[in-house]
Image (cartoon, rainbow over all chains, first blue to last red; front, side, top):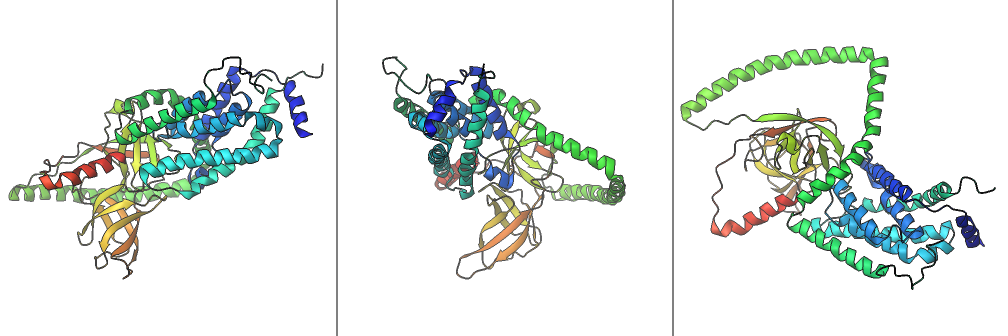
Length: 171
Length: 306
């Protein structure tokens, strides 16, 4: 049974410090801010969204909808998009993470990833819809981003789990 | 494991659904206020002070890469540099000769204008800015440059490079300002065809590198390789600065308008240094007629949105 394996592993994880959560969000903002251009910009995964979704799923009482919304406001300032555009997308994303929290913990990584794809599509389409309502057009290539964001999910999960492991657990 | 089971008898505040509705409504309110009224610019510039360190750090990889490139070039390609230097010198001499000619022409022009008692077209002043970062928004074509309110930059000022128009300042932060490029979707520049003086408006088409002339009748005298320069009508852009070159004209009799595709002349995606023009002589205020009031409102609204 795969989920028991995951639960057994998560028991030896040390509690996550607030610094770790904050740093991960800051690094994600930084990654989003790297000078991506042209096709690479279209293919860029939304690092902030993936990291927020991770924390909303694993620690919904530490980083929930409210904080995701606040991060979204900062993303709006960084991207010079309309105020609330990222915030709306990220709060819906966080809601998806929080609601699926119990279910996703029981799934293995592959099943999780399919759910993550759904949430990503939802949040990307919200962002695009707001843009469409205000400016009247949509760049369809933009949706490639939710595919790459989903592809980022498994490596990021494995990385974060590894970073959260206790350094000495076999004593 | 504190997260996997939520005991309802511990009070954890409102349920996720309530939170979602609250924050979604809050976002939509902000969206509405920002899109419609632009009241939040001061909040935005205050928050940008918090965000700008992250943005600044994010430019380091690119900066290092550039430095590395410069180092490599100086180390290994001195020969190329020497030839390039020679070429530039030659160009400079050629330009200097032309510049002398220009000065004489200017004085002559001034004299003639004095003769016919026309108001002089004042020259404008310019300040150099450096591109800090390109904006990471798939939908828009914008740049951020390293001078803002501190250098007395204002919205609406024109940005150009050594060849032609690059864009327009659309938002000013304390130490940064945002340039919307001419290739931004629906960004409009009033132009004239240099060959025959035909007036038109060139629009950004939203993809990376093209502009289009809209509403040109099929019979309009536009040819490939025509150079489009600013007409100076509207007072925003100075007169006679190159904007674009026509690369394709399609005349399909099934449509009332010809489809004209142009390429911007300025290196819109190339340079690190740009010029911001200021003190462009304003035109006398446009007489507003009653029945045109609606049109004018609409126009200013779309302009603000850009």
